[in-house]
Image (cartoon, rainbow, N blue to C red; front, side, top):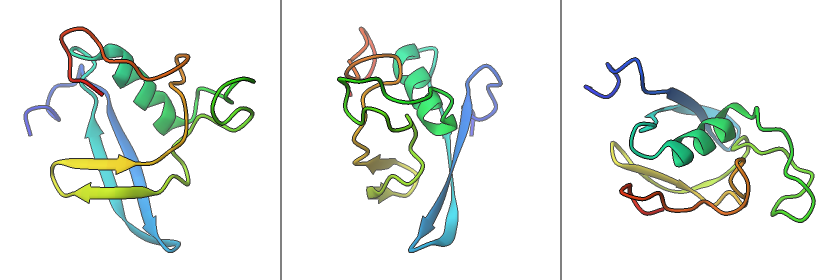
Length: 103
């Protein structure tokens, strides 16, 4: 609850459906103070504002977005994992940030 109360941390939403029927909303606080690159990459994937993946990158020509991505693991209150095949919208692979959680 404390993370959601920190207005300096971005909060993103993912509306989830199962077989086309609305199933709920995932709310995620992005830890931009600790992992700014990972947070910004995820924020752009959620909003779709990063445009299309450039030629030579995974998913070239397709929008950088999580829209339509399938989750293969959801553990309530802990983790949601998707097999979205995409690079970071900031360019290239998602990389571990010094002093942050390893991706």
